[in-house]
Length: 138
View 1 (tube, helix red, strand yellow):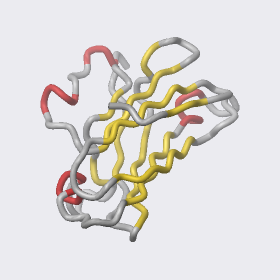
View 2: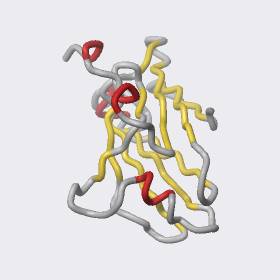
View 3: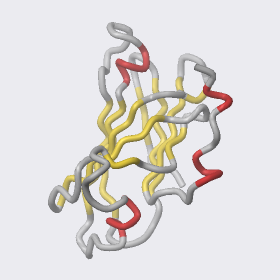
């Protein structure tokens, strides 16, 4: 699939409050077509998970509801989460990206907190088959 011809998500939609970017350390380029799940875990499970696939630029700016019939959008949830920080988890399907048996990490889970109401959280992942690193981006 020619991912370079896909439209940029950011060009058509306002970005969600949580975004991510994946760079493939083996190629030194963005990691396209990587399946990612976003789950809001605490203070309670707020919704069914969200899902997205990285663009040709390795980015996710907007999330789709796992179950298209259930619940509010991520932006709507962020307006109603209250004062308690919310624990979130991004799950990157790395084995599907690198191929079965070609990575030490079949999945990478990154768990983090978001502060109540407001802000943008960008989570970059520098990914290789034998290691990964992450940080809070801007």
